[in-house]
Structure formats: structure tokens, C-alpha cells
Amino acid sequence: MLQLADVHTYYGNIRALRGVSLSVERGEIVTLIGANGAGKTTTLKTILGTVRPRRGTVTFDGRRVDTLGTDRIVRLGIAQSPEGRRIFPRMSVLENLELGAFARPDRDGITADLERVFTLFPRLRERVAQKGGTLSGGEQQMLAIGRALMARPALLLLDEPSMGLSPILVETIFRIVQDINRQGTTILLVEQNARMALRVAHRGYVIQTGRIVLHDAAGELLRSDLVRKTYLGEK
Amino acid sequence: MNWWEVLVQQTINGLTRGAVFALIALGYTMVYGIIELINFAHGDVFMLGLFVSLAWFSLLGVTRTLTGWQLVTLLPLVFLLTMLTTAALNVAIDRLAYRPLRRSPRLAPLITAIGVSFMLENLALLWKGPAPIAYPDVFPSVDILREWFGVDSAIFLTTKDVLVVVATIPLMIGLTYFVRRTRWGKAMRATAQDRETAQAMGIDVERTILVTFLVGGALAGAAGLIQGMYYNIGMWWMGYQAGLRAFTAAVLGGIGSMGGAALGGLVIGFLSAWSDQYISARWTNAIVFSILILVLVFRPRGLLGEPTSDKA
Image (tube, rainbow over all chains, first blue to last red):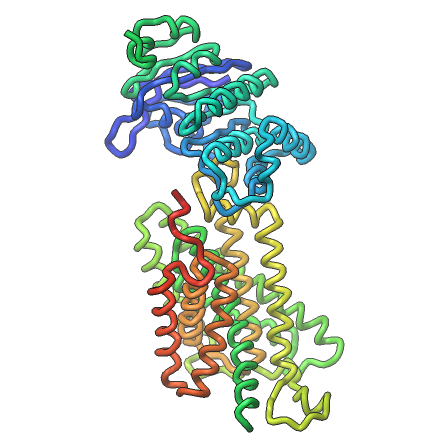
């Protein structure tokens, strides 16, 4: 469904990605784990076209997308819950969700999906008229994920959905990620919380300083020495 | 005239001036909200709105005061044509002058805007010559209190004053509806709040910017037409003065805030009318800018502006 082939992305002269290749198949949860600054968010930004790769290709559903504008890529069926949530602060919860559905061609499905988001996140229903900027961090995270779901994407990119959340909320969010996946959405999950990410994912990639250094089934990665030492803090 | 009649009279003057400032200020604030550019050429789009509306009246054969059915057919038609023309002009300015500089440092489009302002003024100068042009008295002027109500008052309230308010209110309501409820209105607000995330929602940011210039240009055109019908005179340099006042209104209200631009326009209208009367017209600019400075010292975000920290 999604392929990155030898992708090099730069910020000015700084090499952020040094030849990243990865693939996500339909129906999977794939996780990309790595330390701060390893290139996780840059990978997502490159997929979405926010930054352009200097070398390499990004293919979605057999179509090259690395030359398209972000809004066009989104229209092909990729949605993102971005790092730092990026809620529209002066718009209501409902308006934020509606904007998630901005690019959808089918107007009819929107009401049903709004209901689906409210069922996944009852808190959002209670806060529906409140301005996005006044929500708590956890509520904003729910809104960011809900907003991405409103696009009814074929592929959902999640950037650090656990960041800044209480352990209980993290559990909830990851359970919902699995629910969403079972309902038919393919997911690429970027996380620093490697243990949680590998527990829900089917496969995983480990990224270090802009390179994929390890790639395996999630269960295998949980048992691998590198992951246990570097990302799970085990001896 | 006794003291309260003077006050009422100047308040009426302030309201009509303020309505025009508000319409222009909205164009400044919308464009600033979306691409963070102070569009110095905007006042001149208003000036050309006056010139263009005059051309439309001429083309339609209107040289005298409109009567009866003409007021409900020809006048709305000229509003529409003028607004379409200035909307197209404003979009053309953006495409030709600002869009190529979208990724440049902010100073580049700013200087360009000043250049565009000069170009538009000289365009008007070439078109109509240096002398002030007479704008025909197309809208009937009736002394409402005396002729309709038989009240013998020193206050002079005419149908033209009413026109300004009656024309401005539906424009404001329409704009509010557009921005709050419609798809492109929401795209505009989203882009103004967070451009990158707006793009990630599938919003075509360039098209949203185009819509913004379209709406801002249309409002400036309406303001130019209203100004022409009200004062019956037009000058190629009038955009500079009006633009400066309207820009002040936008900053006073909180740049980027539409409600703020409307409120700021009215406040500047009232202040300048009262200052003309009670202090001296020569001091009006000084008064207006002093108020602006005071507001910005004690409330830097302006009357209705959002605190700047919420983008983080």
C-alpha cells in the first residue's frame, strides 16, 4: 500500500533521513520506533509531502506521491494525527472534526463517522462546542485522532499519540488504535513508547539517525537485544 | 445648533465614515490573517472601486440621480459589477505580485505591496488625470427629518446616511455567514490558524488565499462605491489616506480578527468625526494615532485580537 524507497530528506544542509526504505501493507499496524531526533516525524512529513525528499520515492497504492502537494496526497486517502496534536485552537471541537472531513468526496458518510468518533471518544461529545485551544492535553490528543478519522483514511499516520498522556489514557489510546485497525484502517504508528507500540503493531521498524537499522515482526523486535537494550531500558 | 444636536450630527458622520473604514479594514485583516502580509495596496483597491463604479454607472448610462425602480435594479447591479471587478483586481494583484514571493522573507512582499500601491495610484492618474473627479449624484438625497417627518431640526440626516448603513449591514452579515458556516470560510479560518495543519486536512491553501483576496477585494469595491455616492468626489490619492485609517482600524481591533476590524473601523470613524468637531480637523490624525498607540501599549493584541501565544 505504502512504499518508501531509499528516501533522503534534508532540512537545509542537515541530513534528516539517509536512505529510509519501508513498506506498509493493507490492514497492518506498522510501527516506527526510535529515539528523539532519529527521523520518525521527518519520515511522516515526507510521506505527507510537508517536506520533500531530495532522493528516493514515496509510492501510495502504486502511485508516486513525492511530487504531489500535501492536500493532493491527503485526498488520495492518507490522514495524520500530527506531533503536538496541532488542534485549531480557535475552532470548536465540532469544527475541528468537520475540517478533518474537508477533503472527502462522500458528504453522506460524514454524519456516521462523526457518530463513530463520538463513540470512540465520548469525552469529545461532551465538549463538542468548546474551543479546541481550551481542551486538556489528553482531550486534544483524542480530537487529533478523531479529526484524522473523519477523513476516513485508507492509511492513518499517528505521530506520538501517547505523548504527554497519563498511563491510563495511553492504554485507552492504544486500545482504540487497535479498534480502528480492526475496523479496516491501515496504520503507521510512530512512537517513543516502544513497548506499547510493539505490543499493538504487527511489524516494526527501528530508526537511528535517519537510517532503518532493524525491521521485523513486532514480537521478534520485542525480544531482540537491540530493542530491549536501547528502547525498553532492559539490561 | 445646540450642543446635543452637534453631538448627534457628528455621531452620524462618525457612523458613516466608520462603516466605510470597517469595510476596508476587513480586507487588511483577512489578508494579514492568512498570509501575514500588510497589503499596502488595499487602500488603492478601494480608490479604484470608486473609479470603477463610476465607469459602470457610465456604461449603464446613469449620469443623473436614480429614481424608483432603478434604485432596486441598477444600484444592486452596479454594486455587484463593482465588487466583481475589484475582487478580480485584488486576485490579479496577489497572483502577479505576491504569490511569486510566497516563500520569500516577509519584507519582500511588504515592499512589493508598497510598489503595487504606487502602480495603482498612477493607473488612476493616467486614467482620470490629476484633478479630483466629480461623482454624479446617483443616489437621491432627502433630508429625512424635515421632509419625511416634518421635524424642524438642525440635525441633517439624509437618505445617503441611511444608504451607507443599509448597504454595509448585509455585507457584514454575509461575510460573517461566509466565514462561520461555509466550506471556504472554514478553510480560511483554519489556514489562518495553522497553515501546515490546514494542508494536512486536504485544504488547498493557495486556493484559500485566492478566495481571501476575492472577498477582501469585493468589500473594498463596495466601500469605494459607497464613498463615491456619499461624497460625490474621487481623487487618485484618496486610497492612501483611507487605507491608513482603515489599517489603523484593523490594528486597533486586533489584526487578524474580523470582528475587531469592524469594531475598529467604527471606533476610528466616531473618534475622527468627534475630533474634527471638538478639537480640530488638523489634529484628527494625531488623535487617532495616539489612541492607537495607547491601545497597543496597554493591550498589544488590540481590542478583540487573540493572544499571540496560542499558535504554539
